[in-house]
Length: 73
Image (cartoon, rainbow, N blue to C red; front, side, top):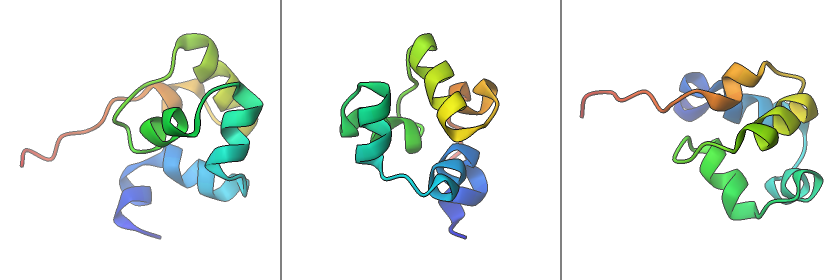
């Protein structure tokens, strides 16, 4: 488990799903870049995309919509 997944339950859920960013993007109807932004917490999906992603990964939508936590650096 990497530092990113310890601090980012969304990245961990994506990893556990076994789906690639490309597959997730295709299932939700967005670009791979959008999924990458969500995974890295640089961006948050629109509400309807957040619910689709949460359902796809079987996680709480709050995990999808969480903000990046600043480490003060």
